[in-house]
Length: 443
Image 1 (cartoon, rainbow, N blue to C red):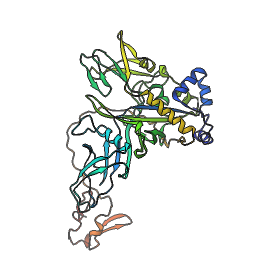
Image 2: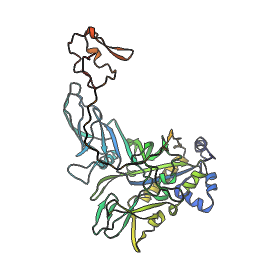
Image 3: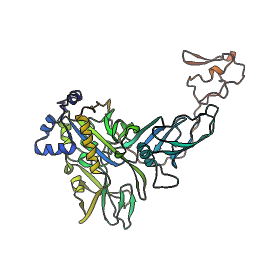
């Protein structure tokens, strides 16, 4: 894979206002009119995008300390539980967490409302400690009041996702939307030739530290997303035909534009979040140009039957067929529709293109590529064998040292030392070890 350009060279062109930037749809058309070699020579950056439901999303919030301070253990924002097992005033609100009062309202709505600048009711309680004596707080917060508010999504931008249909005699409600009985419809969820990980399927340019468009502001790829796998079958063009790679992303939610993030509710399934992501792909060589130039008719996915156990694969189709509005299943013409927004994906790709052309958005070189082989496992129950509890081990933290009035406990060059001859068994240290080591030590 010989480079014809480097990211550094492309960034210099961006700074001078000379970079050639095209959306993925534009570069597909260019390749049809010329060649992949011409794309590699002419184009510097291709912008890709998706705007789709991404359940594995959420946000970290630092609420700030109350007076007197408290350790927030049970936290609710407008009736939605926020995970408080992090620190005194940090919480994580998951997009799919449902309200206790209204199952159509959840964490996704909390995130969107905060981004919009709305006031939300905060109710929180804790057991009260010597250092955090307050036990309850109730009031209203917004994004200007809280300290930190950043999106942290463990799994976004699936590389490919199966289309869904239903062979059963009943209408079923799924995260792929409403599926009518007897192959009444087909739904799918990707932007096809605009979709970020479909345009660089081997992730040659997308990795740790890749700068992206995330909900209207800068974001970054920070790790392979959960359920990332690269051991899947590919089509004759080298593009995976089933759910494969994903990315974990982060960005400052205080700077996000609510236009590019929308709370949603799928009947019978629950709350989810539409997330707008745009990824720039630098065209470094002909191989990257080849993948970026693939059109909907060259990118395929599977159609799975959600009406049967195990969701068997019925057939393989390309995105041009899905986009046509109909596919044929067993001789029957079946209507298709997307649950993601193509128009929003196009808008995001265009906005990202504008940012790059204006010189305000430079391309980052990944610190690490995600090319280690990964697969996913199904959850299996294990035997309930009770293992012997491990004996606590000292971690040399020193929490006990200042409690000893006789200098029997020491930290010597950062290493814990016990001097038995000085110990009087006063037991001042007996309840101080944070990892459970018996104090005073046996030896």
